[in-house]
Length: 260
Image (tube, rainbow, N blue to C red; front, side, top):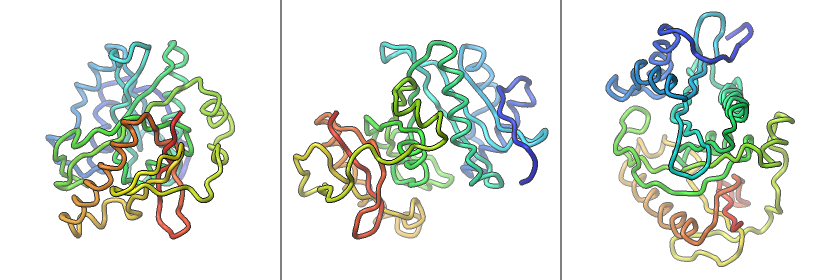
């Protein structure tokens, strides 16, 4: 992939139609699971945002958000973000999110939410380390079985809340990186289904290989998700948030939960 990439709002029916190819390539969904361009057009016309990253005339990534009205503050829910496999590794997901942030702030929207699979390490690092957002809710099997890259696993999701005017978010947007962790990571107590420490900050391990091991062992994948769900649900219930991703001394990634 060579040449400059331009991020802009989608303008024409052809622009919106191009999101279908990117979605299919990124998620390998059956056509029934791909959002129709007409739905994206209608949501954008109604006050949402759909923006794409283009190399020349070819769309290589896009983001789509809709107005959210049930949180009591001006908010956008970021429903879709897809990067074509040919363009992954170029930082386009972060570029699209930062474009979305600017777009929202210009319209008086200070909060953006979205959901993601908490076992996807790359997404977790983007959300919490690069963008400095936090996960504040666990949504079990949110979409039902989705197919594609997720197969028949339950679609468990973290819900992210990205407070756009937060000083840490502002610094990350301005500097181009999330910076160091805002706390000491050494000797974090580890939460397990059998024991959840009462400390204000705890680590919650999760599998390091994304979805690969679950495709090979669906039953084991479901057990791992149930165990993880038990821990994080208890932490969210007591008011903690997932605010960082780290690597444990024994190896493997872990979320850092803290009570505000």
